[in-house]
Amino acid sequence: MVAKTFQIATFGTFRTGNILTGLKIYPSQRLALICYDHDNTKANRFVKAIRSINENIEVIVCLTPRQNIIENVFGKIGRIVGSEKNRFQRILLNVSSGDKSLSYAVLCAAYIKGIETFMINSNFSNSLVVIPIPKFYYDRIITKTNLRILNSIARAGGEVYGLDRLQQISGL
Image (cartoon, rainbow, N blue to C red; front, side):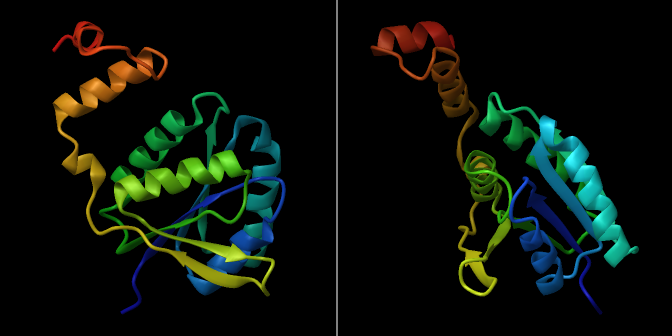
């Protein structure tokens, strides 16, 4: 039995061939392209190119704004994985295309969610690079209290001076 595979890939205006290489290495039944809002038209053209090669693959485009990139990407990845994890035996992330900020944000989300991640190194004959991800999930280890503290620090601009101030802004 062939495992059903769902692949998520960063999409940008360069190295889009790496997405196609990723699909050749890991044939997938469904692909989600994560890209910035302003790349929507290019992403939809790329979807047509993919479908001309493989008409059986489902492709969706997931748009994200540049601002608050990590927070937005975490939310997108969480929603995608949450809705697809029961439909597919394997979920993979390809961080080969897109700019560094988008790829790093997706890589961070993969690390937190424990998702298999890879990239295609176009500098070395399109070689596959598997990125090790730990087997535990940080979103299950961090307690609600710790998460509340971290969110409070983030809302305060990333810095809080003193435990009294931290207690005050977190409500703990």
